[in-house]
Length: 288
Image 1 (cartoon, rainbow, N blue to C red):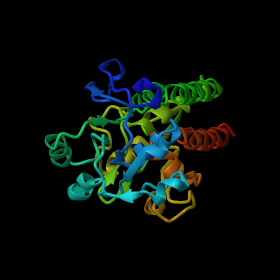
Image 2 (cartoon, helix red, strand yellow; image 1 turned 180 degrees about the vertical axis):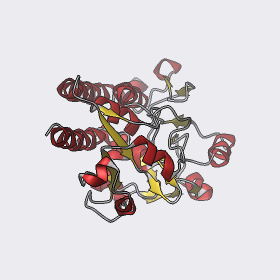
Image 3 (cartoon, one colour; image 1 turned 45 degrees about the horizontal axis):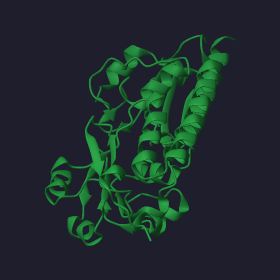
């Protein structure tokens, strides 16, 4: 009986070559069966394209979908357990270029482990990322289907809020030090697509550090942040002392669910919809 009938054929014809988000070509001799994810968003993407059963290890905070919680944990995104990763004998490692320590990933590469970088910085890039990850893990059809759905939903969302009256938005990533998002980060991209104006869009880096004075000069109409459950936690209340800020004067505080908005996965569209609806409420109030 021919070997391929038993699923054992590993001819070079079956080799998989896919470009990752760092622009590197990742080539595997066959469909990977023991995948390790080094970031929560990467874990979620692997499950989205149908590769959940092939995942043998995940980073801390890989809590979605529920099945991900039963996988072996291999440390935090910036503190990987290299020995545990080795022991799991992965045939593919999906890393987060801007989240994992470069030294840790380099060590994995020196051990001969194939590394695929997942780094989605714009919502527009997500469909292609899903297609490529689906192809690399042997789930072309599911990856393509998920990609089409994300592209359709994203297009509909953009059309709904296109050409709306601009609203100045300040997104607070962290309060001490005060950090926000630039246009290079997917939340910054989402703000613009919702008809928002991010006064710090031009700054370098994904999450630049700024000063209180910068925000006061920007005079945002709405203050936005994310919390674990999307409920107010007081993280924006420090701004209440600045009563001249339009957002404070009109009590325009918007709290979003962190797991929806902080991970570049299809659930990000849920968070963006929530963001757009919040900006729209501010827009409507400002028009009166």
